[in-house]
Length: 261
Image (cartoon, rainbow, N blue to C red; front, side, top):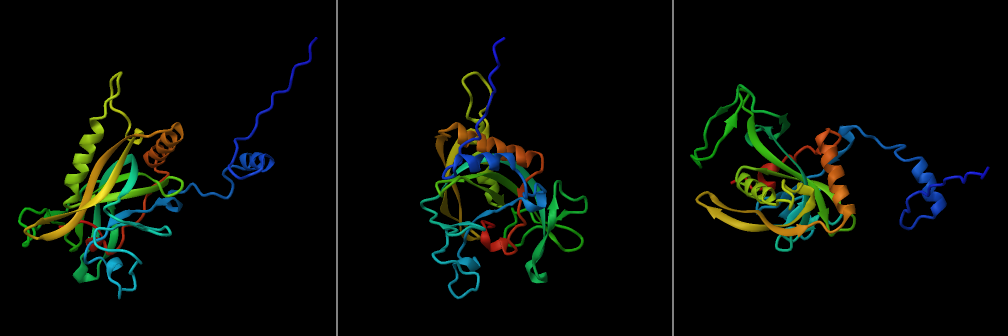
């Protein structure tokens, strides 16, 4: 009887690592890593405005090179991107909620997120802008509906996960972007998954009767170019979908760190 041959499998290659070490790494995959959602919060991306502390050179929170219209990638080295250059973004997951804030004149600060608008919330209006919805709770806290686009930023080394929060005037951009994603139809029918797509996100100066601010400007960059990037996007989608990842706590000075007019 012919002797059967042993079947061996090789560990996937890890760039810059000897094969024997790659095999040990594969054997010990996941050790020492927390899967708890609270340990896997994804950083936020903001547009810096003229009153953002990050652009004021005498402010302790100033970031070298930051100016109004810059894109701020929180939590990484070299976090400022020129708004005219923009970032290449692969959207992977979308959700929305209501963020509760202590008003600035009461000390300010993030309170929490609500998946739906609390029953005790009322629209008290805004004397500066009668068309603006201004929801508040009886405790005096403000509620701001926020739309989140989670995805991967490309072009700065390995793709990195970030979340873009859009509230107030940003809702218009978010809805237009979602319409564009939904227009990507597959040849056999059905809508292409968001993580099969790439977009260039830049900033653009906008004005109205209340003032001027920088907002997102979304440009279609076509499809992802590799199965690796596609699978990375799919994995990030699934991580958010099952609650393994979530957006980090919003920046406490959110009112001047993003488009709120």
